[in-house]
Image (cartoon, helix red, strand yellow):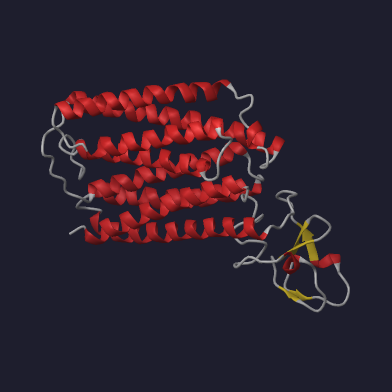
Length: 343
């Protein structure tokens, strides 16, 4: 009965997680401004591959919105026209959102792939929303959270534009990340509401409270991690990507709280694991949670003591969002017997 709905919820979740991973890769490689405009890339639907393509050329047709780099600044074609033998500045307008005017083919295509995945996630969620329309009366929560997912991905796209327009302002990047987590949450509600689960044993109130407590700890850790990432971004601007050994040479207090709190998160989830064993409940989710926390701790140690080895930053972020997703999914599942999700 829910087959198509479940399929497109799963597809949407997978693509959203791919977008999160791609966004983390963009950050790791410093490719955030690989496309300095939005939604196009240098004014094109398919970005250039060589710097020469962004140079002014005589006897060449340009479309309105096409971008060239001239004297370390971006110029935008004010209308469609064909150039003559001489450059006519009246045909071009300076790009005013920011003053970043650098082309790097690798950065451009990393950012472009990130945007393509974002567009695919929007398409998948739109299809999901279409299937949810038939459940407006039978199970309104499916329609409501499908609609929230659609509005969320549209808002996320707008946020992406503001991130580029601000030349990667750290606060806006953080908001972009938080919106991605909220989007995952919306989709998980649809996922759970469209499935029937048989619990082998009813969880006790203690398990539910302990799980919710560990979930809150995860949210606090993510919030602290976002603040640490914002600090690292400022250090990257100061030292550059070639000197990661200096990024956490003098960290702020938030870093030490974040690092120490990881021990609390691990111990709390170990307690949850023991409680699950004692009550003979399904162990699949707590095992996944412990593996993810172990991976997070290992990556955190590697970043601090080994000067941010390749891919540790995006993996750290992806594992954090997976941990968030697994915990929330488990919370929604074990509470099905208490709440009627059909309203």
